[in-house]
Length: 185
Image 1 (cartoon, one colour):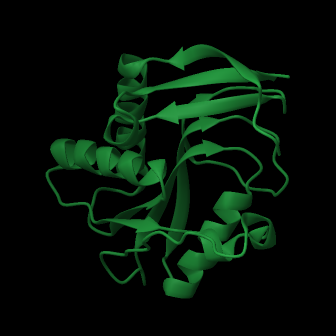
Image 2 (image 1 turned 135 degrees about the vertical axis):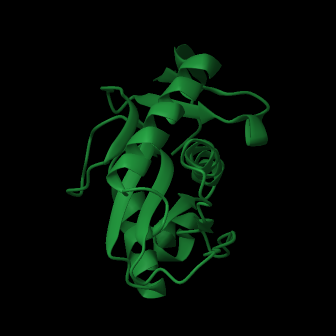
């Protein structure tokens, strides 16, 4: 797809709203996992890793236990790998513990078609057999192509396919927030 000529943006979560959403999600994750004993958070590269780190720290602060966290690079599990190019850039996949018997929560920034999550599920299953896998996203924008849903959502944002959701995290982008933009050609 050619890059858009212009993007008209609207902020849908500022830094404070994003922080509140992550705090709420952390409470929900700990509640449904019944604490931290078997909990593992795994962020999808890129921004999911930073979001998983933040949620884990919030849970640790509230619960007092340690929450192992890892990272998944799903590049080689994509169903459109041939469109990525002849030499895809592969990031780090890192799991802090054996997933067998664990309550794994995959963390990503935006849930859209479901294809990224499908790839993450395939990779996780190749790496172990958790007793449960759940999904946490800061934004669910709809338009599923695969029957996948998030268990923990910061904000549901109905979108058109012409719109783009941009999640910014301090660790990568120098600021926190979520904006929506419509591609103007």
